[in-house]
Image 1 (spheres, rainbow over the protein chains, first blue to last red):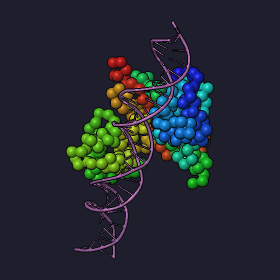
Image 2 (image 1 turned 135 degrees about the vertical axis):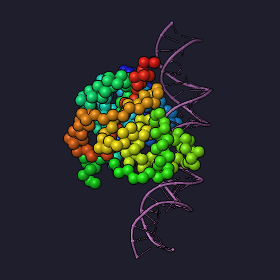
Image 3 (image 1 turned 180 degrees about the vertical axis):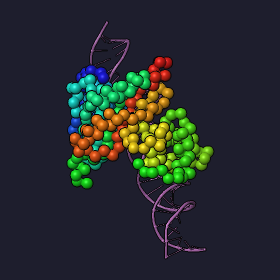
Image 4 (image 1 turned 90 degrees about the horizontal axis):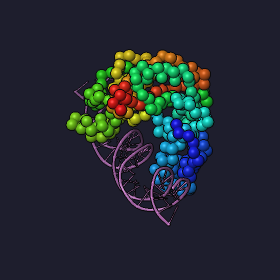
Length: 133
Length: 133
DNA sequence: TGTACAAATGTTATGATATTACATTCAGAT
DNA sequence: ATCTGAATGTAATATCATAACATTTGTACA
């Protein structure tokens, strides 16, 4: 994870859009929300997202092709982050678990696997939505 | 996970294509490999894949938009499966870990989260490819 | 047998996500 | 001033997935 430099204009706009949202956003939704700010093409969003992910300020949710602002951007070193994603309301909880990290770490060491990125995502209904259902 | 009935023609063809492959395949790659068998459209593949996933015979790798045949289709009950995906050679290792399962289970119980599907995918270089690099 | 129903299939079109390629602009270093 | 690398702008295209609707197939059972 690279250190955070000053953000560029596009990076700031994308991060602000994600911070303002109450859940994950797709790249194209971000694009639409930034058209008034001058955004015209998907690449402007994808390029900013790539940098923001490098800085640890944004996470990509692989299982739903969407992006969220990191809820604790100051706590670095937590390489292995898990997400609980509500399929009803879109709410995302971000959490770490040392035991999970240790077990997966053991697996990769045992198998001489060199991990680059680990995805842990639980999709389902959050407490509030599960009640309503 | 639904029980496995007799597979239909398309389901059999798709499963055979995945079994024959030495790594995960995208839906469109499967389509191309089955054109000689009469496949014409993506939906034929996606529909078969959906059923095969219901039967526990195929897994979707969320982080790479691809599909693999389950390596141990007889061992059901292993709801929480983890994957180690080599980004160089495409090799996929499928494994379970009771401790990981227990820890994530604890989290969802604590948070009253009702999980529907859990994704655990580690992308990186497998032992063989890491050496070569 | 036939007929009714559910599941599977075929086909076209379209929607949604992501990247390639190339030109231009901007900011900092010398 | 000019060089350079990063960032940006833009068009086109590649890749992944589903909607909508027509048709066929399998099967239960009157």
